[in-house]
Amino acid sequence: MPKSKVRKKSVYTPPEGVLQSRTAAAARAAQPSPRWYAPLMVTLMLLGLLWIVVYYVAGDRIPFMVSLNAWNFAIGFGLMVVGLVMSMRWR
Image (spheres, rainbow, N blue to C red):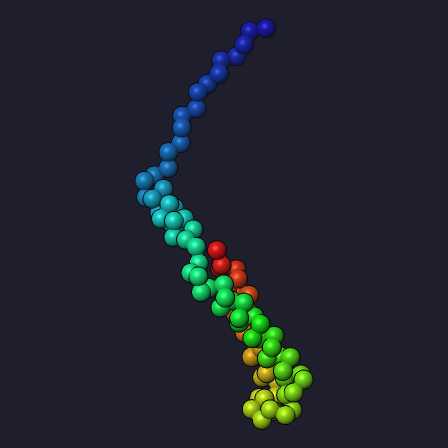
């Protein structure tokens, strides 16, 4: 049986503006985080956890926590959420 002819495909080259913008965005996104980023991220998560634990254990004896009432949960969880969002951007 005779072999079929193999056709050569032309190589695709993207337009010039597309290639340059992708490499610039990739170079910007690949930079590592600053040295202070990871300690701040962990500190915020632990501070939020500590805030909620202190509110549960001794919240009725701390005057400003008594006045905040349920906002203590918002503060504690807010700090933890900020730390978690930072962890998604950490490199």
